[in-house]
Length: 413
Ligand code: B12
Image (cartoon, rainbow, N blue to C red; front, side, top):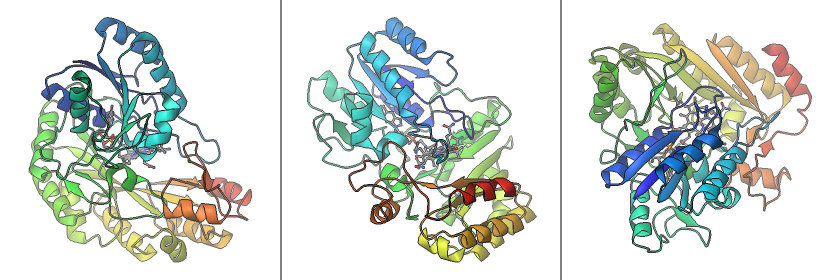
């Protein structure tokens, strides 16, 4: 089949990201024998015109669209990012009769609602590498796609809620359609794990990747990084949910990275629980230059509300170790969740200040995702109605904090 894959993300907020997930779907689709074209809309000045040109030139039999972001998670000035994606779907529809399939991280949180909103034909929640080619095979044979893992159609949901490969080694690692960016703050994504067992009360990741950690052998990951490094790419971003979970896997990665020639630098996200000196030393030796520490609060009570398994002391210890080994620390506070008061906000701000971080990002109000303990709490507190599907962003902001909290955070930054 002729398959057109479109990465619909045009966001540059926080960092320019590459469509790694769609690239992996692309590699799997090629391996299954299809003729694939890849269109990344990020560099396109006129995305709809780019879609039009691609369809006219290629006349695809099927179209796959990747949906990364639903919104920008900003309570003060939320931007709903599915509207431009709906335009892309509309453009495909106007130019082609090919079935339109959507998937991606953002999509997977809201499989039914986003499918309806976008007006696509089929959606895939979860990993795309195995299901998308299986789905194409059925479409080619004129068979129903119903029943494939994670597959939603406009008539109904899936037999299996999410497509999830048990181990990542059999899946592709990369595709040459991915064009590494070259700007000064652009970091090529690599992934060595999927899934997150942490159960933070507000997080949507379990809906996207599940709670079970699924690994790729460190050897495979470092071979890829080595190949890209020899092609001149020396900055990488581990998009694993928590680089240090499990620690053993991360240590193996670090050891292999430390031995790599040419050397590379990288960033990652750490969960500040039980981070040991030996581990941080291994990260630094392996080329880690920056860590994102999403500790979110400096108030023990609020950390417990968020179901975090660490204390402010753990965060401080981790932060000090990173600083001692020359690794930049980017901290994150997420203020205004259940139980937050002026006093706990002050406690968090003072705590973050005392860490002497290289960078601190503060978010006010927590984006409510379906199926989370936060969503239940928001219904109980009358913040949202129980039937709210939450596709359009809704936020939890504890009563009594507004407007004070905005001025307070502004004054402190
Ligand atoms: C790492 C990460 C980041 C890093 C990115 C670093 C980098 N260099 O790429 C940083 C910290 C910079 C970041 C920033 C942001 N992020 Co972010 N990020 C993630 C994270 C943890 C992993 C994403 C990733 O790379 N996955 C790896 C690839 C391989 O997987 P994938 O893309 O999901 O693709 C697979 C499937 O989805 C599927 N698939 C993908 N496309 C398609 C297409 C088809 C047709 C099919 C069938 C299947 C399919 O198959 C793929 C392979 O299995 C996710 C959470 C998560 N666990 O998914 C959040 C996540 C994607 N981010 C999110 C958000 C909101 C943002 C920001 C807007 C936050 C902000 N305000 O700054 C920015 C936007 C950045 C941008 N310019 O787009 C949200 C999106 C949901 C939403 N509310 O919109 C997520 C889901 C987290 C959350 N809160 O729930 N992010």
